Image (cartoon, rainbow, N blue to C red; front, side, top):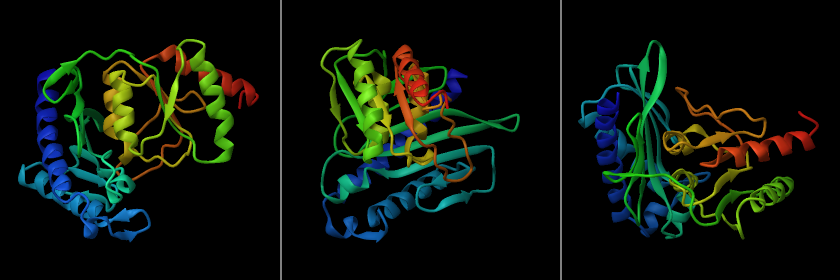
Amino acid sequence: MCEESFEYYKTLLRIGGEAAAFLRDHACEEVYGRSVKGDTIRADLEAEDYIIDIIKSEGLRGVIVTEERGRIDLGSDNMLFIIDPLDGSTNYKHCVPWCNVSIALFVKNNNTYEEVAGVIAPIFHGDPVGFAKGCGCFEGMKKIEAKNRGNLVLVYADEPQSLPLLSELIVTIKEKYKNPKVRSLGSAALELAYTAMGRSIVFADFRGSLRNVDVASALGMLRECGGIALDLEGKSIEIVSNSVMKIGTIIASLDKDLVLTYVNRVREKRGGR
């Protein structure tokens, strides 16, 4: 399993790296930051087409689920690619260097898709990171040891009703870690991937608006690195789908006890609901 999944990882690493370089070449160009529809900018569409063309040129056949165009069939359903061509579009539009290309690959086994590899490729700075199932987590081609370090907490809590959830999270973290520093940087996949590596203690998104395309590769990496991701009901986050789907709130960390303690406290305050 490791050998095969690592070959898939290397393929995604190449595709993600080329797409990130394409976006880097056009960074801060007004035309690429121009809004197309809603939060979608031209760079989203151009990068998506670029990735799809590379997948085709590699001779890969499967189903592609993308942020902008939904489902694309390439003549087979044995492989499933879940792609976010530009995570952090708002940052990219405003020439803020914190965004990435994310690609996850699932392979069909007995009519069930299994995630075998994923890559999160920063556009402006740093090596791509990702995982190969059964092989571990990687930064570029270097295998990494995932362990918590520092005191960074990465949280999205845009709405007033999220503030009590954030407050309870900080209280829970402070019982175990000193002086947590809360940040929200604008690229969920990168932040979740860095949490998988232990560069942040916790990643949490209380907005309820995340989709499978946003975090498929990073969630696969988190689990391969030994972490956990739950919703507020204590259920594991499921991301496999042959279409774009919302996955809701996420609490993720390498520290499984911390996540479980927090979720249980939230459920108790809600009366076990």
